[in-house]
Image: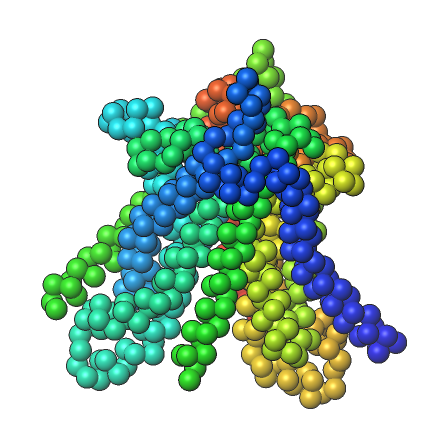
Length: 293
Length: 279
């Protein structure tokens, strides 16, 4: 009885793990399968670099080029990560080096709370506050712009950056602080000249991961970026791949080229993110091995 | 040298202040703007009005969101916790472990909108389930799976080795050890991970836009029917410019759910019980 129970349980666990692994394969297979027909209509280069997105024929023919959307996605993510980096790393230094264990265990849940806010709420507040503010200040016309979206996105990325950076900083502080204080180096001097430089590599990894998250973000960005097929400029409108899919999927007739092209756009996004995540996982393993040696 | 040191210090304090200010502002703004909209009637009636949604409440959206979340958590948490158990207690091969980690990190990296696309092509069309709670639930489940797995695995790994090794030394089987020692000892973290995962699924809009969420529906009667959801309702109220007060009210309810579930999760994780209970 006991062995049967154990046998069943261990196989159940294995089966469920297999299911987890297969879910990634399923997502990939189905997105690729639905995306491929799009390339019978347009070539890959025209799709990736073309700037004209015309899914309906209004006399000039249809064309599917997501160049601007890719550029929009990259621009808004890069800008957001720059802003988030400035504040996030500072807050991580604070959490890992400036407060006691007790205060830290109080502050971490607050950071988690910030992470728990749904993106549609970020978009909502972005619309009500940021866009209005930009409008009143007379920047960016209607207030919808790449910069607006980037600021909003930066706030959304903060909790992720803060928690991943402060974790590594805490480890480094614990490892080097005793030696530094034995040498008579002041506390904040150690933080500025030992902890920060040593965490640089890990911060870089977190930044790349956060960029991936930023690129996949849909709702908040879509609500404040203006959604126009333009090449992104700081104060101009733009549109990301994720917004494109969310906005047009409802109107695309199933099985049409438009529908397949949206899947192809999703595939492009998926491939970028898989590359980022796999690359980071491999880099991190190498980094750990170096630190272990 | 000195300048850099004090700059770093000022920078750290200022950044943290800014983060906390953002947090307070986000909650404060929604609570302040939404407080007058919240009445019992708003919470307990269906949307109505000449333009549907301009009057009335959000009751079907609350129930719908609960249905989506529950489906997602049930479908997502079980494989997530099983995978964590496998990685910590069953998998002996280092190579397989890191391969599975890689897969999980990649699942976490799939943008939620792409999960929506996946569920649409496979479940809504290929399996002909149509737009329903179950189709969207599967997409959300894949979204929360890595989220819960990472937390569960961390809890299992942080368990003192002595606890598991003593059980093994006493000749307990793996199943018995897991059932009577590992799971009870990690209950706090597991429950809080599941609650936070539920909160994450509850707030997601993109995966259910074309897989199961609809603008208006009555109370969901079964898993094979579409339903309303709070975040989608909020988005549609804004996108169609239906009504600002209703939007503030919906946001208020969402934020209360986020706040309460985070408080619950934090409280639960603190109640860890890592030592033997003396009889």
